[in-house]
Image (tube, rainbow, N blue to C red; front, top):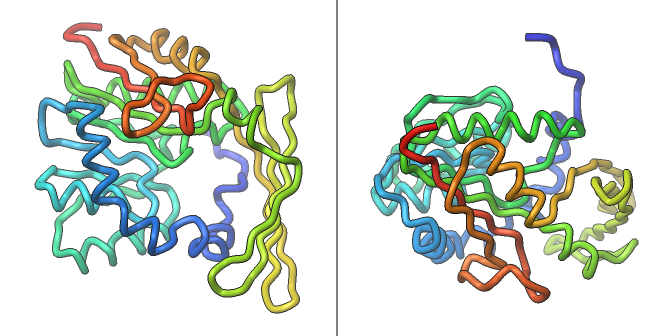
Length: 254
């Protein structure tokens, strides 16, 4: 495999500096309730779960507490270390794998694959997003289900101001700047963290999809019975949708 160029998500300082914002204890505390909603929506037929881009194990640990057999995959060592610590504290066993989602595949192994918290669309090459979907499909057992949770293009068109800011729990200021680029296929982000009179900038682009665009790509891979929702409560994917939740199943045969 050719060596890939270094990308924004390879910068561990991004995850370290912004960890308390992205993975606050408040957000961690509601994981148990949210995973109930995930299970209710996805309706997995078995207990083997892949948490793809598991981060600090927010959902992985919640699933393991409900007696699912969980594999958590992430490419970032810092986040996996956090996940391992959280699992140990909770007294649950989870298989942790450090690997890029473009490369991880475990054929016919899982009843449910989760990719949540806007972890889809990291790559500039849309072919790599398709590869991720293929890896998910191949890793599912026949009849297995995939749930992806991201921010839909339709929602972004409504809510994203060009610049916004918020004060973090530690008193730091986080300024967000956003710009839609490449004919509404990508969003360019700049986050400026101002802490102790010092500013640090993090820049990253994400590929964005409408509900129909993501549905079309999953159908191309082979997913069937595709459903779109606007949140984890199962609201319709319409004008008031908060998130883009898509669920698809692997057929008995490909």
